[in-house]
Length: 80
Image 1 (spheres, one colour):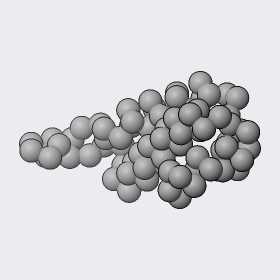
Image 2 (image 1 turned 120 degrees about the vertical axis):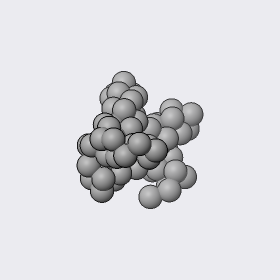
Image 3 (image 1 turned 180 degrees about the vertical axis):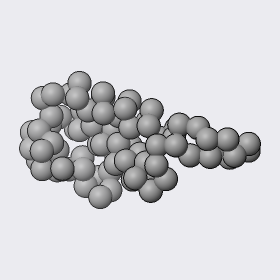
């Protein structure tokens, strides 16, 4: 799903375009982060040292999740 598709579907559901755009960004960040975590796991290898580290996409996922949850007036059930 592309950003424009998400924005358009949210606007159709009644969201103002500016808020729909912000929500779409957070939604797509969340999806990308979840895909990365699912593919590589929550513990990954550091690119230079190969030491185990927490997947950096965990914080991206959590930040996007908080942003979406703070926008409670956006009707986004159809995206999930």
